[in-house]
Image (cartoon, rainbow, N blue to C red; front, side, top):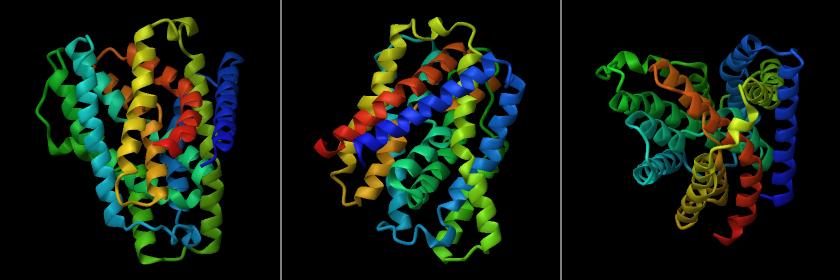
Length: 315
């Protein structure tokens, strides 16, 4: 990873977010349009980019076994769970906000932002690492994540976890991760025209996903309110800098390849995930602070990711 490459890529991300912001302000994209774009990213563009990582056996040169990828990914999530519990323990929050904050520490935006950044900084062949990480992410957020929200729900809407709660796992992102894994393991070759079509769709991931973030920023009632709470900055310092630094320091002490270590540092360094806000709203909880934190962490990640790339050799 190169610091200048990281800085340039994050500047490109910033520009595309600003384009989305201006499109909303000029009434070129409405909130309803933005919801449609979000669905396209989640169900079409992101899955196509994940799957394109194994087209033409691009990932055949990976130095790590699939078992090690699954094991290290699981270890990272265990580390994040423990770290999040420690951090929320020292902050003053209502039971609802405490569990929401814990989810924001744990579940980053590995799809909308993580996939384009990994591809830009490390290459498309490293998306197989991201695919396995995202597969475990999806399982965890629809089990542990939902359970955590219902444990802290004080609205009287608590319910026991049921197998039906796992239904959201059957989504295009998860299916794309599983299909990617199958193709990677079997070496199955995708016909040229289909591969080309998937690649065209994959190329739309970065611009469309960042336009969506920019429109979300423009839709906020007050931009100044986004930057006015000092507690959000403390959260972002821990989320975007402290956690990935400690996690990467530990990863570099393991017998794993630099490719895996760098990819998973980027995964840990991602800003807070939009899916947390969707789950919060679904459970009838106050999502205003959650939305502000997600957007602020996304903007600050433009600075924090090049910083982490710079610090990586010294960890």
